[in-house]
Picture 1: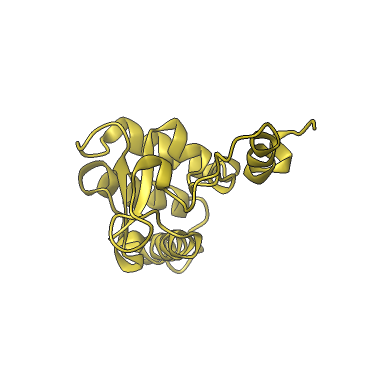
Picture 2: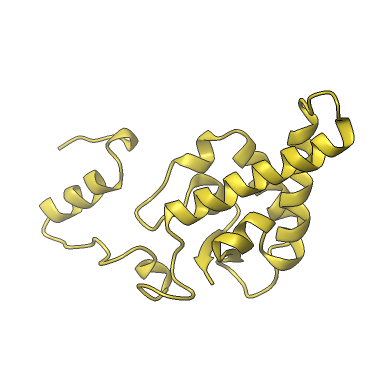
Length: 153
């Protein structure tokens, strides 16, 4: 069977299964050694989306406070970038992630995410596409490229 990346992760697992292997993980994050649920497990999409929307709204409100009575315009994007990069660099969370009870961790170390990874994650998120293409483990392109994962608190 021929398949492409458009077929998604299930198609890849079906190909492996057809070859006599059962390589599909039982749950998201199993391949990274994460628990199936609870703190430290892979964050679900709804929590990630909640955190992102809260950060966008916060950026719009903060920017509007400085640009009133005019609309914030593109300045909101800059504000969002700052409230995303700085907290993730040092603490692994944004204000929205704190509300959603999730955080960003490195997959290659226990060190903080760091400035370079936080900037790259934010830039890729701004392009939308890397942030909405997921693998079975719930990691999007921007997570995989920066060697990070979003976990539950």
